[in-house]
Every structure is written in C-alpha cells, then in structure tokens.
Length: 370
Length: 252
Image 1 (tube, rainbow over the protein chains, first blue to last red):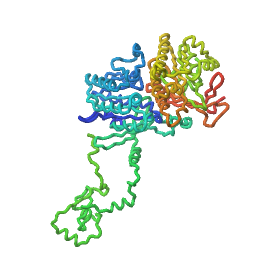
Image 2 (cartoon, rainbow over the protein chains, first blue to last red):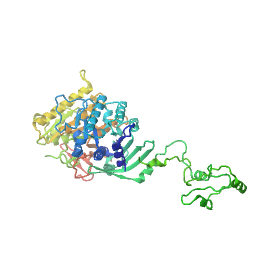
Image 3 (cartoon, one colour):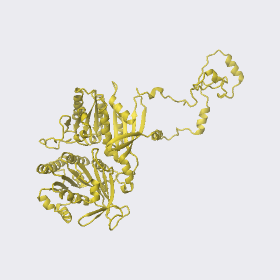
Image 4 (tube, helix red, strand yellow):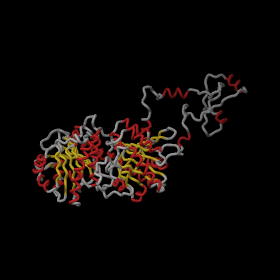
C-alpha cells in the first residue's frame, strides 16, 4: 500500500497552483539496507516508468556511474530517462583532452563538471526536463541520488532553494531524493522533511546499539537479518494538513524489493505520536466515567424527559418508550407536565452514539482520496 | 594463483572483485596492515595485473621487506612495471602554488594516468588494484579538510567503474571513534562495497590468535551472488611469511 501511494502521488503530480509532490527517502548505516536503499530507489524508478502514462525521469547521478543506473533498468525504459552525470567529473579534475568512457551513451547522459555552481546545475536539470517534454512525455519526475553529495558542494539553504525551485517549475511534475541521515545533523534532515510531501525512512528490523563500533561477532545473525529485511515507515502529508502514517516491512530478494504490510505496528506508531508534554492529556478511568455521566446541553429540556441516543435502527418515537433510555434524576414530574403543554420553542438534541467524542471535529469526508 | 587465505578469499568473493571499494578498518590494539600486504601480494602474483600503492605511512623499504618474507619481491615488480609506488611520507596537498583541492587533483591524475598506461599496455589485465595507506594521514595532508579527502576518494572510486579497478583503503577507525568526528568514518562506510574490520578478541590477548576479522560484503544490486551470505567473522594469526584464517576453535 505504501508503495502504491508513493507511486500514485509521484505519477499524478500536483494540481494547478500547487508545488510538485516530493518524496524524501531516508536511510542510515544501522540499516544495512542503506547499501540497498538504491534497491528502493531503483524500484521507484521502475514503477514510475512502467505506469505507461507518459512519465519520464531526469535522474541526477552522484553516487554511482550513469551506466550503473542504466544497467539496473530495462532497456525499454532508456528512452524515458535522462541522466545528469554528477559522478564522473563533478569538479572538473579530469584534463580537457580526457575522452569520456566508452560505456557512456551520449544520447541520454549529460556530463556536469561544475557542481559548485548551482544555477548551472538547476538549468541543466530543467534543460533535460524540457528535452523529455519535447519528446511527448507529459510528466517529468526528477530523482536525485543523493542530496548528501549535493550538501558537500553547496550550503544547505542553496540546496533547499534548488529543490523548491524544482517543485515550483511547470515542467517538473514530481521530485524524489535520497539522503543518508547519519551523515547530517538532525536540523538538516528536518529541513528536507519540511519541504517534502512524503517522507519514507528505512530502519533496521533488529536494532543494534552502535553500528560503527558494534561487536559484530556477537550480532552476526541480527546483521544478516537486517540485510534481508527492513522497516519502511512512510509519512504522507495531505493537503488539508492531516498526516497519514504507514509502516510496512520491506524484503530484498535477489535485488528485487517487496513490500508487506504490518498492521500491528501502525498502532504502535500511532501511540508514539502522542506528544510528550509536561501536563497529562490522557483520561483516567474515573475521569472517563465522570465524563460519560455529564449531561450535555440540549440533551434535556429540564422537563425530566429521557436522554435520547439514536441507534440508527428504530424511530425516535419508539426510543422514547425504551426503558433503557437514560433518565435524568432530580427533575420533578410537575415540571415535566408543564413543559409538555408549553408552546415555546424547544431544541431536541439526539446524540448519534454514546461513544461519540464531544470534541470530535473529524471531517467525515477526510478518507476520500480525491 | 596463490590464494590470500581461504576464508578471506571466500568472504570477498572467489572471483576477483572489480569495480568495488574495499574499506579495511583497524585499531591500535589490532593492526589491519596485514590485509593490505596480503591483497597486494594476491594482485602481484597474477600474470596479468597492476597495482598503484599510495604510501603515506611507511617508506617503500618497509613494504618491500614485509612482502619479501611473504614471497613477493616488490623491487622486481616495480621494475617490471606491475607496481606504481607513490611514496608520500611528507605529502601535503596544500603548497605555495596550489590549494588543497589542486594538490589532490594532481595526485588523482597521477593515479589515473598510471592506471590508464597499464590498461593501454595490457587491456586484458585481470586485476588492477589502487591501495591507499592510510586515510587518517590523507586527512592530515589535507590540513584536516574532510571534504577535500572525500572529493579525492570519490574520484578514486570513479576509477573502479571506469577502469574496472579495485580501490582498497586502510582506515584507523579508533581515530574517528569520538562523537565529534564520526562523520568521515560514516562517509567511508557508505562509500565502500566491502568492509574488512580487524579487531582484538572479545576475550582479550592470546598467544595463538592475534585477533578477529569481520568481512561485510554488501554486494551490488546486479551482483550474481550464489549465496545470500554477506557477513563473515573469523580469527587470524599473523605469521612471519603468511597469515592463517580459521573459525574459533578450529585452529590446528
């Protein structure tokens, strides 16, 4: 389900007047799948390109050679992808007379040699996107592997501005990037999370205390398990501000990626969302009972009539004769008889359910995926 | 072909790995230099091979003496053009004429030129190794600039894919074990495809066992791996002219 949500969001792009959707894919060394986060990266690329809806990809390659990415994808997708080669010579260290490696295909690979100049970097990406658009591809997704490499050559504000500019551009329908969380300070990670609409993080199945200095001999079994599985946590930001959380299990088998849902974990994730504050925002059992006994305004007319709770199966008149209806104590019969004869306006409030939270303001249409 | 040691060869892949970055980590208690010596001997023992050795830690005479006891004459190999040895004991990337960036650019181009020359002579060379001893001295040469060191290592790693080389880096992990500076180590771990860690035994010192070696072979997505195993842990004993590898309790 997480994979489907991500691919659908990236494929559909944005509504007019909105920024393009952006996925921030996070990994770290404790999840050995960090080396295979590229498996997830490749999986997303393949899923996008195989939707057959005119989607194309501009891939900005920092970590591996362009030929590596092309070798991961089926040749049928090679016409729908353009690679910006920031791997081979990003700082122009190679002599000018040095010929490009023979494995490079000049048709869909563009070499970038001045990574320190971000405006040129941005214009290179947009040029490739326009090139794809001119070939009939209606939607162009930009994929960056990885922004960690970008941050070694440019300051954080410049990189964030570049990503925001890409999201704003009319030729770019969606964007996703990879970032290694253990190579940056938390505020840097948070900055990228703020400008993204989806945040997917890879975490180990078995938590080990310290990857770098771990006593590996004692934890080989756990490490081996971490190499084949991982937790895939996805946080989706909806347009109305609501955040949806999903937690699934990820399996790597012979280079292919499979997602499986783990329902029991999502409740744990939801519980962990309760903010830890200094005052108690939870109710004790006694407090819940006392709240249940509180009579809300408009639930009684001061005439001793029963509180009516509509159960959806019978008419209101039948429920009035129901002996299980709650009766209000302390009201005299005389008041009841007087109010029955009164012609004054009355407000009849019927609570839908005894379980309804009085402060609930949940939009019933919130679950619609329009 | 003389094998490095069955367990180490098995962990790294019996077929010579190319296009990969190998990170060898050690600490004060257990030196990992013997891994470099073994891999260098393995490379040079092949008929068609070439090695570039960037030595910041010891002079040529040191490695020549060690490898001679292991049955490999570095002087002859150097004379035959199979070894390009860069002795950089006093190397400083910054100079009066150059910035740190320029200094590393020159060093990278010297390495690249040596590999290109070897490839042009023998395009079917089965084994081309680039070995760096070690990263902490490289950082000193860069006046502490971690970014310049990473740029240099990135360019060296591009040679692994462009020239089908194997890049082997020795790193003293305990230099970067403090909380303030774990980032270079983490960068190296993200960069590497194979990690080899030499560490002391959990039980302390022993006469017959000198330490334990952990090999993490991460593999690549398009790797044809017969076995899904990625982690090996075994013990070793460094002898005068060889190294023994064995699982705990199985030493003869």
